[in-house]
Image (cartoon, rainbow, N blue to C red; front, side):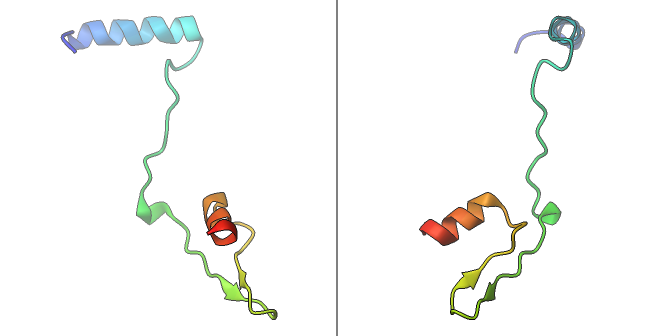
Length: 65
């Protein structure tokens, strides 16, 4: 971005002080090794049953296709 490392650190520290915290929202990179295995089962009525702790996106996909 055309600045020195020292300049970038000064901007980061200044923004951290102004925000009283990090000047960005940290995110954990999605890593397939961090994912928990999900074991769906077929219920007595023949419907697919997704565990309660499954991600909401999966539950939504099963429900709505």
